[in-house]
Amino acid sequence: MKNLSTNVPEKVEIKKAVNDYCKEKGISKADFAVKSGISDATLSNLEKEKWDKLSSAMLMNIWNFCNRNSVDNLFSTTDFISTFKICDKARKYHFMIGLIADTGMGKTTAISAYSRRKNVFYVCYDKTMNPRQFFLALLRELAYPFESNLNEMINRAANELNRLENPLIIIDEAGKLNQTMILYLHVLRDKVAGNCGIILAGMLYFKDNMTKFAAKEKEGYAEFLRRINLWHTFVGLQPKEIEEICRVKGIDDPNRIKELKRKKRFGDLMNEIYLEKVMKEEM
Image (cartoon, rainbow, N blue to C red):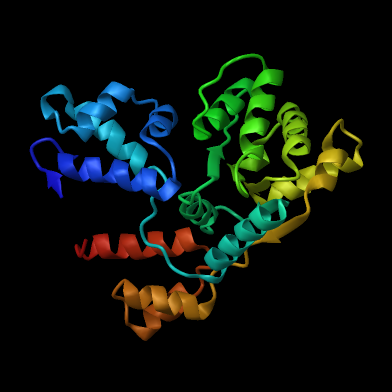
């Protein structure tokens, strides 16, 4: 429930969200402080319900962090279920797996949902990141506040991962990784290969580019490609899955469902349903 005057969720709801997040991830409040960038003092005020010391902006920051990987509209599609199985396999056997899907197929939705689990660490790569920024983000996910040169940061991340039980790193937008990042990830992979799984989630061109650059003997690509144990590609929505989603969303016209069965991408289907309801003022 939200406080309509400030558009901030009720304060006790935010406190509960923090406690639920810590329980779900199996971390302490101190770890939460590192991961979220929120001070221990602020979290202490929240825990003790000293509301006068917490601004609406700070409360909203806490709420948004707790819900950053929360996903609405979860459906047990073939691709969603297969993503969870692939992530489980990567953790159990310490595999590095390439997860490939076209845009809008629900890849980020699935891996975000999985990342809520204990000892799973999610980093979304973007092209503005340099290697140091990437490993800072990974260390923050690990709740390990450490900043130094790259060699030390990679070693600290590896040491932390190697002391955990079947940890998993999920790197979203892996298709955007440049050659320098590939070389540094190769170093990390070699240091954690006996204890940690890695999911590299990207667009279809991710695998194509890896193969192409390896064939051209571009430094680091052949070696890194060889370390990817397997590739998994999304198949898209199946007709029965589309029918079920339509029913859940209140669409029961057979002709309309037939039209929507052309939408193989989860994002495209949900957008079409959303726009249809907006136009009918049903939202």
